[in-house]
Length: 267
Picture 1 (cartoon, rainbow, N blue to C red):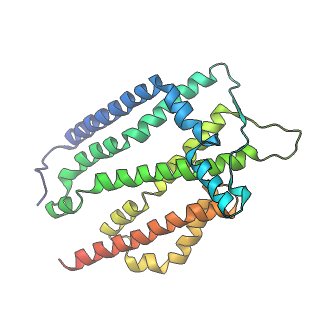
Picture 2: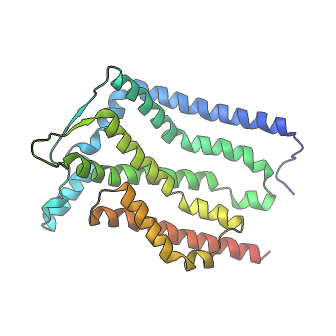
Picture 3: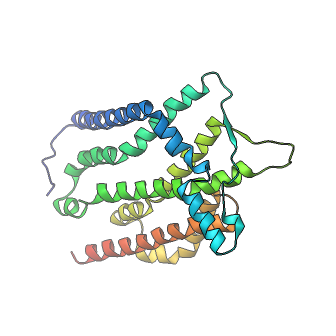
């Protein structure tokens, strides 16, 4: 038995999906417009903040470095100049960044609209056990965004912004390059933190099992290390800092898969 009568035609389903997407996109556009208006907060307080020595993560690592006598933990102490080399460069990045903010902040609503479209097709029991899907997915995504912003971004900025091949070369970072780095690492972290959700759906479909995940645990560690090395600076501290939560997410995925398989066998 499904949660709702499903006698709509294919075109009617497409029309229903279109309205869900329209509402979600409208919400994202509204958030993007708000971000565009309050650009001083978005850029000065959020986007450009991780490069400053008084940023939360930078101050915390600096204090830790002083306590354990490891001065190298004090990051982003040397500021660098960010420049725009195109006539419309700043205006273009203003629009692009506003859209990016709209997508991140509006993600929970976007997912909720998609969930409202898919929910009628679920069995009553499936719908009951999937009530927390929107909250869980949104929470993991935003947690990944925050992890990318507060952990990966400052480390990446410190390494890439202070790296030089010669004292005769001065780092003047292009605005587009800087924002591209911030957005890529934060989005990558947000998507990566959805791993338990992915494992949930794969387990529901019978594609993966707890035994499969345990069997290939070593292989997954290698993949996680490669992924962590891709989105972080090439130093051991950053690698460990990013790898650890990803391993926790994988282990959480095994527990989730185990519960799903157990619930299927009890039916």
